[in-house]
Length: 138
Image (cartoon, rainbow, N blue to C red; front, side, top):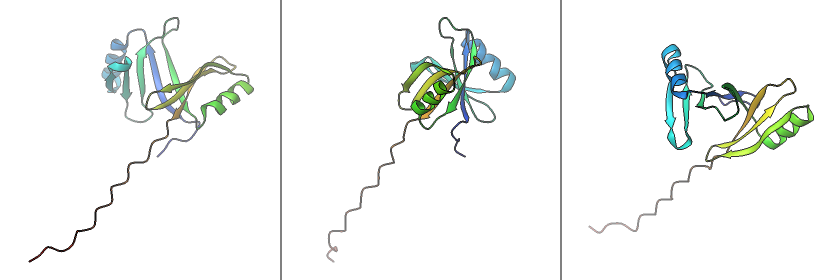
């Protein structure tokens, strides 16, 4: 079932020691991890969705959990965030070949992220088969 707008679709763990965090969740809950060394990031899956990511904390920020909320249009969602008293902390930013994300803080102080999928190109149509070129001679 496809996630609906406003659903939590990704849970990101920001850890001061990602290797220890990975080992902990593997041992305690059986989570599976996939390393993405080119992004200095790991994806994790649990028994149910949503899954998420694991990364080293951003300098100047404490370890935290960052939930990503699905948006059909991040720019429109960020306008609603601001109109409702929230603050945009990170504008819409591309995740190459995946989609976009943005960071906001609601008036009570909770920091959350938005995620918008990148439109997927339709699969290429199979090439039409060429018609047979006449019958074989006997």
